[in-house]
Image (tube, rainbow, N blue to C red; front, side):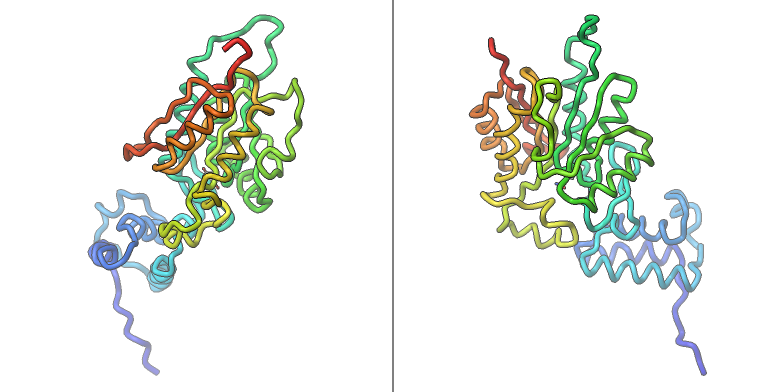
Length: 300
Ligand code: GLN
């Protein structure tokens, strides 16, 4: 019996093919080269230093199977099971949104606000500060913030409705060596309403894509509940902003990621719900992406 004649492939061949594949499909070139590196278990530099490396038959098969999955709409991060965010490694799967670089703007803004706060270290003010991340998914926001605030006195709580997502987030907190309290909750629903348990910061990257947005088709591998919301994508943002006053201390920060065309609507929601110092910050592409505001104090 003759074996089918599978053409042997080198790193150089794949690099060349990557450009063609990418041009003909929506697959980014770096997904193909990153997938190659993952399959052959080599660092990025290998692409430059070892163009003549010949893939084994098993490697070649695995590589090809991954490219087929990409053609079927599976993103690279679900194939490797990981995504970098805030220079930390996060496990991801089909139950979690894949962290996006623009969400780092949200993390940056929260840290910036915290750093700008006067340091109140009076003896009767030793209680840790409290931060809440709503709809934590992979946990990327809560964990990155907990990582940055590790040596400050902050307690980070993260909530999600999906138990599967919470499992992933919990394992990411362990692998990144941070302490985060996870709560199974639909937005605020399972959180205590208590004067002593108010949050200093509430942060969220909720689903905000309009249910009829054509971009959703390209994101079909990710959980729809993490991506899209009724009322032109504003329903969950509206709920979070409207209820924030119950859980946030006066003067506390609310920071929300939203769609590029939702800035005006979200600022209006903040203003209608007793927030001041309301502003929107652009993402790395210059689009309005994160709106922040402070809950009005009685005298403000
Ligand atoms: N907080 C997670 C992230 O920003 C999940 C967000 C979501 O599922 N909408 O990636």
